[in-house]
Image 1: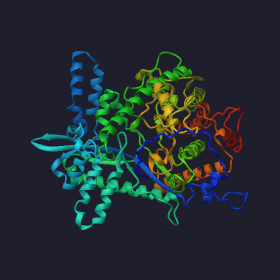
Image 2 (image 1 turned 90 degrees about the vertical axis):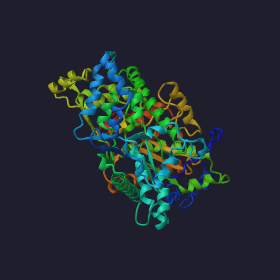
Image 3 (image 1 turned 45 degrees about the vertical axis):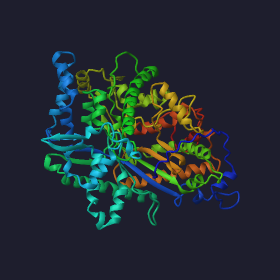
Length: 624
């Protein structure tokens, strides 16, 4: 939506924010008549006030023979494979590791290599693409005198005295755009200049390509904000496909046995998961972590951050097993330990950011009376309100359908990161309801896998235990929203509260202070982002741009507007949604239950969440 503002300013914590008529007057909130209903068109995030942008993560594959594609070639030529072969031959390590790794390389009749890089002759790059490449290889783009990145050698190699380059598909898109617009430098300067501006929109996630909006959108005449934003994303996706087709031909990828493809897919590839079980976590990062060539001034530091995220989440999943033991879900010492190399970061979703022109303008004016403290106090309350409505999206507008086999129904595998996201009480209830939904019982007794794959497959066949189907596996398999601690709530409206929570979580071995806090919906603060608004991060895969994505964005906008109406009219305050882990877990269990497809959930009769109580007064047929 806007270029990140990198200013770091320390602010004092102010907790006595007054939500009164003076503040609402500052925000320009109007009432139809004195003392009567407010004019909703004057609220932040009203149709005339809202701006929107999106980020989309995509899956890539390279189709080709093993001898032509970068991924199998890189593995085959690696010291890691040579060392494993030597150790397996001498008996220092299990031969199964070697046979599994060779099976990955040899058993691929379709020739589909997920998240592989591409390689081609360096002389295929034009002058502009070469200039862009040399610029992106700088250690610090703001200080070229520092020279190149330390890892530059991983992008180049020689073959038959010819220089070659190897890059991820996320960066191939940028090189393809540079190659395509170079002839227009003088023929059509406007298109050329626009193409240069668009290059920074081709970014990357931990592994996958990621594109961000080419421009910030507003509601057009006759179209909703959702339709306008969805059309922009559709155009962006189309351009990505055209650039990839162009690159396949222009850089002679197809001619040399490689065909790069890109598409929407929320799940980490199955074969990539198999490979992660064959190799070390360090080698996994070497293969799959994106080098972050485009979009960051110091790409190598961002690359190190990607490594950090993978190490932390891999460690965090191990710690989740201990929590399952504490929660009483694992009752003996027989567990199926998760792999050291967690692949959940290879998931792909869509983030939709919404900004308020009104709030951004007020925050840009230090004399307006609306400060960063107000933004944080109101923003955290809005996020808490929004979380109550997120089950409306799951399986309705967005999904990541997945069938989990019986042999994968170990709680330490099936529950993923949920031990870090739910209170133990809700975690136990969710697990029991999930087992019932999946019909994991024999003669009325609950049954989960024993561990050995052969035995579990035999039991599955004998008793016809098929596992279970989930609406949105991404929300279960990935750490999407981390639970607060008793001492450090994430959404109590105080400045720097996320910093204190991350410190607590780091001490518990769950998170790292350098990482951005994971939430379903995040406040985007003006001082950090250049606009004031929110980012919805709960979207997985849309079936349709217009029928699903557009309507989901409209609903997201409506919920923000409703939240501000509740706050301005005094119907909801922070006290109505207390900041403690149990209350957080109570409302979020509904989202995770929706992702799994569990039809019921439990709320404590004496819950202190008065807003949730009000919601539950409306539906009929509640049991108590």
